[in-house]
Length: 111
Image (cartoon, rainbow, N blue to C red; front, top):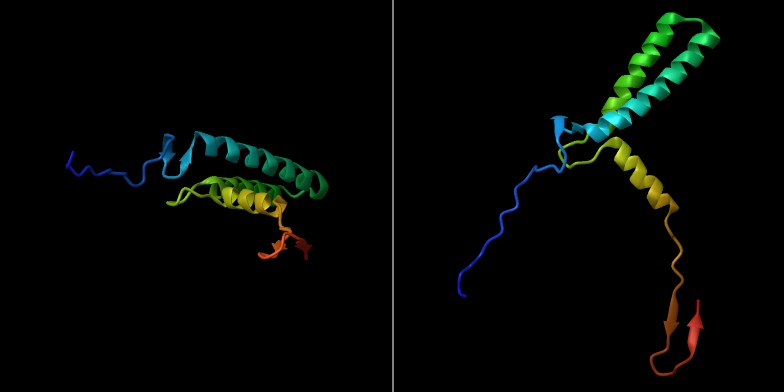
């Protein structure tokens, strides 16, 4: 009963398999959706402007940006995760009504 037991928690263990650091199956799906959005934007630019080099550059930038935005860093966060956290925070409740109670009486005051 007097034995000290210690708990070892390893660092850097991820719950999902990754192909390279920070990029796994879930990130592949997210970057595929971003790449499809880049294809749509590229097709619109090509149909409106008719410039093939501009369309190719737009497509390459869109695909690389979608991969970079979904790749997680060493803290297990990606740019897309941070944006989703900011959106969730913006939608959360910001007004906290305060009611003070007089400690000597039972009447309630609203501010």
